[in-house]
Image 1 (cartoon, rainbow, N blue to C red):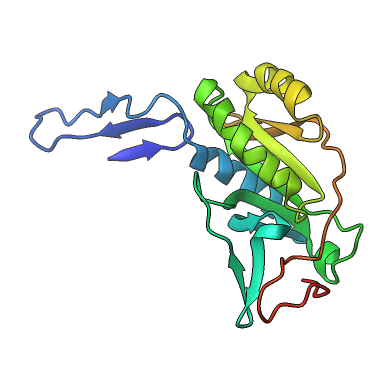
Image 2: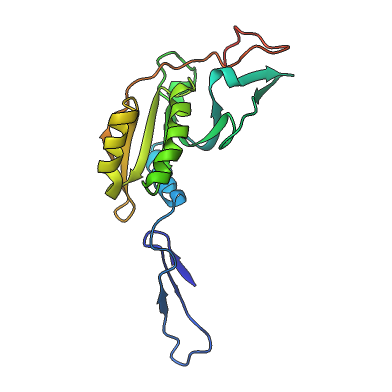
Length: 201
């Protein structure tokens, strides 16, 4: 069996067939979010200076606590409660070592579709990215076919969020809309027993 991650096409051979011809089978017509995330990962990791992380936990500052020397997250209802995993976090080694007030750290949310359900999920996800204080820029990454719908959605609802368009077939990523700078907050935690409100991550 052979699976092409770009086209989503699976081909296989059946041993019992006399001519042993490969039979094309449309395993999945559309690419998954994982494939688009991998495209972005490869794009950013092509630079030796790049610092890229996937599925990184984050939350709003008031929902992060220091307890027993560890960073904890307040519990909450809904998708991931009061925490979220960023699809990608992108920066440069020189931007975070040392971390400065003007460091550039980008959070990227990747979507492989842009239907009503996706927009509803973004209404939960993007405010958390924006208000976390951990990202100086936030981007939404969508497939190239969805760039117009995503541009309209962001202009109306999230003017601070930038937009990337991804073309999986040609392995290209385009900057459609520049993100507006957000305040990077190094103060991480709310008050709890043993925490120091002046502590900085």
